Image (tube, rainbow, N blue to C red; front, top):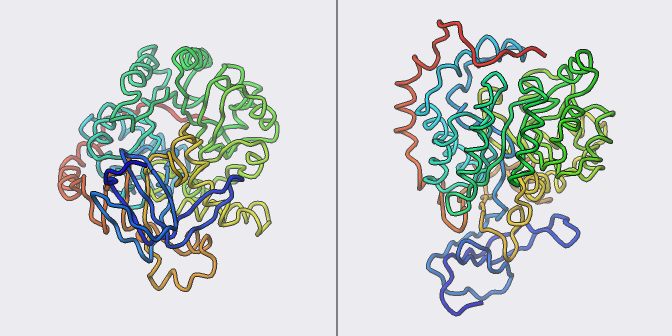
Length: 448
């Protein structure tokens, strides 16, 4: 420890910690010292070291910043435009026709609004899979968040779609002072050919890049793939070499029992992102098989998907829903426990996006991505089981302060890096052109 003042000292809080067995615990009346964007110490010593900035966090809980492991942030611009529809109609009749109108400016404004929503909900990092991602990267750099970004592509775009995804990933890898990591982002096995997936896998291995894609999103996709091709979407990923790279699979509610040994045998690092609210809205019959994946040692990160399907970028809600749906689908109230849900929301989510060595726990040497939640409200009192209070009683609106790399992006509920009112005004002006479906075009067809 140096004698010079720290950048930030947080005192008086209860800190969520992981022990050497990765079990969740809490330390009361703790002090967190931050220097150069990194957590220097977490201690219960009564001493308060000198610092350029001090936060008195009495009555608050300090948690690792939440990670939204799969979303399409700019789609907040489409929140509520495609409601109460089956998946096929949702894509083909509304969302893909509207997305054919997207401009880079629409994407930028959507990203600004999404980042504001996530910062206010204690999300410090998000994994995004969308179009015009140069603009999303610029928003991330400006607003101070952390992000794992990929330029999505379909095979219908021709070779240039895949090439653009690679160029984006190489150009922005390590950008924003290291806050941006990147991935190759083929859309899904049903919109990307085996040849393109195999080429993507080869590029991933050549350049040391992970892959982020949708696969086996629902049971219909798995069954349709079996009928048409004799293999599941997960088996497609295996035979094209995607599972030999590091891969983040979005959703996976259609993962079948036959897929589990395939995933277990992958030579790359495999992770799955679950976004339960959307599955409920689409009335999908199954959910992400979290317990089976857990038994294989595959991390399952928490996600929201885009707000066009989920209506929300609230990972806090995803945490509670994941715990509840797992209890319901397994018929076992002991799974997931609140502590297990918090593990998914913190360390497992960090691992899912390849940042398990730098994020996910509040410990010396980790990046200082910290959120402070105020549990003094009537809906969180009294506290008999702090983990249960955080998962099942607290809300994202209880987050008071959001910190990334030691920089405060929100303090006492005030956003410090984004102007929401101006974004909303301009988005409103652009809505008629964005929502026009009179042209009859769509960027892709959903046929699974």
